[in-house]
Image 1: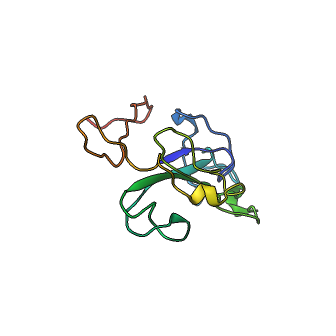
Image 2: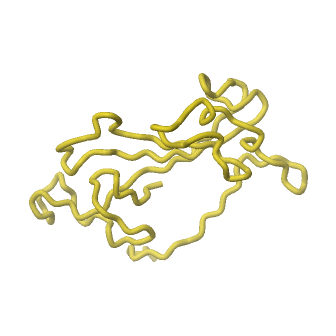
Image 3: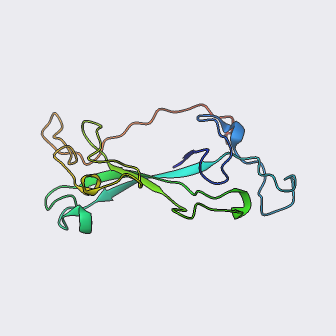
Length: 154
């Protein structure tokens, strides 16, 4: 899912929950864009990643444990200036990542500059809790509908 990130390419301001900073032209074509300008705001990409059981530990494999599915959210940014004139030489595409937890508290620091072994070590809040009927749900999510100024197809 694309999201507002003024520190990501093209490092221009953006207004969350607002289509006002959506790009109206492409910087790769001359049609509609003033020279050297890109009217869209900075953006990042959020992903939900699901990890199957059976290949633990996560710090050097792809599973949280041998019996449960788990999930993480990642936010990928691109730290380059407009037209890729300059990029962050220390980390061009930093990824913030954290396991999805019952209690909402990450296992460790989600930022790449602060991540440590705790960030990659799942705990008891990572696996799916039982539902009222006793079944286990991998992930349950709800997203509210937001108003948009984009044209609707009828």
